Image 1 (cartoon, rainbow, N blue to C red):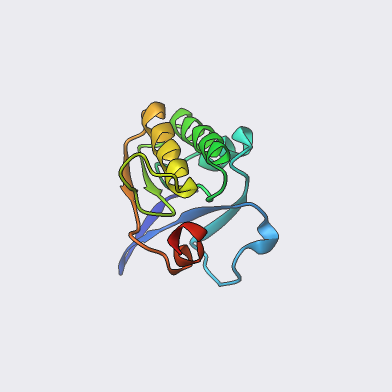
Image 2 (image 1 turned 90 degrees about the vertical axis):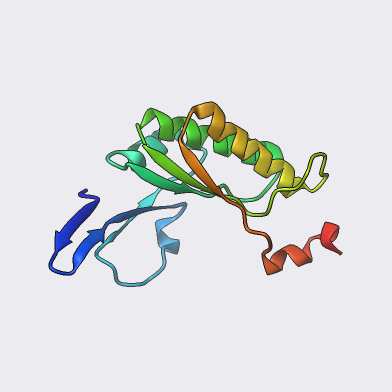
Length: 140
């Protein structure tokens, strides 16, 4: 896969998008998106999906903190082993001062720690609010 190409209009990027089930891939036409089926539990599939990729965006699904930590460790270690240059870590919620009992905040901290421990160069995007966060019992 060639990650970019230059044409008369400038540069065109090719994106490899990881999805748990190919049958759920969005149905929009794009010759510049390659859909790859893999799961954050499957280091072998993650490594194969990372071949030839220099940069990535990682978003670990929100769930129990221990599951988020395991997914993040697996992904970060695999991405580092695959030789990625840089990742953007997209968290599902903003950070808060410790201690904070909100499970998603605890999970986010473990995700950030896993990326640091893997030695990946990264930038973190922390949204300040998603409207669905208002549905959490802790937000009521």
